[in-house]
Image (tube, rainbow, N blue to C red; front, side):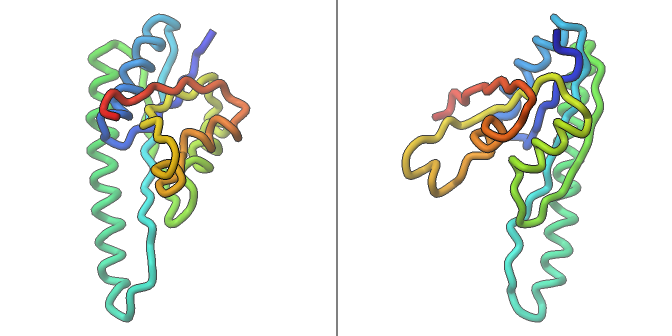
Length: 149
């Protein structure tokens, strides 16, 4: 049924729970997984010297993202799941929007996302990429709740 599963990963325990669920599905369905890490840096203006710091910030975020993808890829390979990795950037843009775009471009049969399941004012203040993805993607979505909250 599902042959191409997209899994956004950010290194958090929540995204790793999503990855674990996706790996179970992939083994069961003999599906491949695309691991997606989104570099998102919320850039703001900071004066004449800010460009130097922003350049270093972006590089640090890319390097961290590469490590996250490598660790998640190794986890999938240990489980015998065919895996690809992709890093995408959205400086100051919407992570949810980028996930939807990547799901359509790959094209994915299923999206598996770890989510914090925030409610109320916490959701309003922090936003919800998972909610955006669920509302906007034509691809089926499996949300995996965090056990931290």
